[in-house]
Image (cartoon, rainbow, N blue to C red; front, side):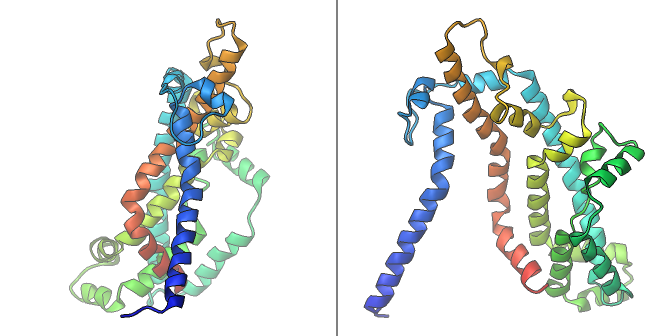
Amino acid sequence: MDRSRGDRIFDAINTLLLVLITFVVLYPLLFVLSASISDPSAVVKGDLWLLPKGVNFSGYAKVFGNNEILTGYANTIMYTLVGTAINLVMTVCAAYPLSRKDFRGRHVITAMIVFTMFFSGGLIPTYLLVKKLGMLNSIWALVVPNAVAVYNIVIMRTFFQTSIPYEIQEAASIDGCGNFRILLRVVLPLSMPIVAVMILFYAVGHWNAFFNALIYLSDRSKYPLQLFLREILIQGQMQAMIDMADDSLAKKLMEVEVIKYAVVVIANLPVLLLYPFLQKYFVKGVMIGALKG
C-alpha cells in the first residue's frame, strides 16, 4: 500500500521520539554502570561520558568486602520473598470471593475495603498496634502491616471477573469441585498474567522499602539493604569501606564516588533481572485488570 507523505512524516517523527525517549531512559543506567567499573579519577574529573574508562572493580571489591552490605542484602532477599508470598496469598484470598457472583454482600465488603484506600489510621496508631502485637524489631513488622494492597485486590478481582467465564466455575462445581479446589485447579492456572504482575508489584515494593524498617527496626543486624544505601548515598557514612590508613584525601574521595555507583548497581540488579521474565505478562495482566474495573 502506498503511503502518503503525511504518513511518512508521522512515522519519522514517531521514530525520532522513541529513539529520544529510549536514550533518555537508558543513558542514566549505562552511565551508572560505566562509572561503577571505571577508574575513580576519571569519574571524579568528569571525563566519563558513557563508556567505561580504565576498567576498575575496586568499588565492587569495597562493597562486597563490607559485612553490613552483605547482611543487608541477605535481609532484603528474605523480606522480599516472605513478604511477596504473604501478599500474593492474601490478595488472592480477598479477590477471589469478591469476584464471585454468588457471594452475597460482596459489593458492601468491596466498598469497605476501598474506603481504607482513602482513610487510614496514620503512623502513630499503626506503630502502637505493631508494638502491642509484639512485632517490633522483627521481620513481621515489615511484612504484616502491608500484607495486602487494596489497589491490587481491585485489579485481581476485575481480572477474575472479566477473563475467566463464570460458566467454567459452574461446570467445575457441578463436577464436584469445592470453592478451594476451583480456585487452585481452575482460576489460578488461568490467571498467570495477573499473578506475575502481582509478584512484580509486591516484590519491587518490598525490595525498595526502607521507611517501615527505619521506624520498626532497632537492631542493625536486621536492617535491609535500603537502609545501608540511605546511609551511604544520603548521609555519606562509608568510612567502614574506605581505607582510613591511606593519607591521600583525594584518593578517599575518588573511592567514595566509585562505591556509590557500585552500590546503586548492586541494589538494582535483581529487579532489573526479574523484569524481563515478567514483562510479557505485564501489559495483559494490568490492562485487563484495570481498564474494566
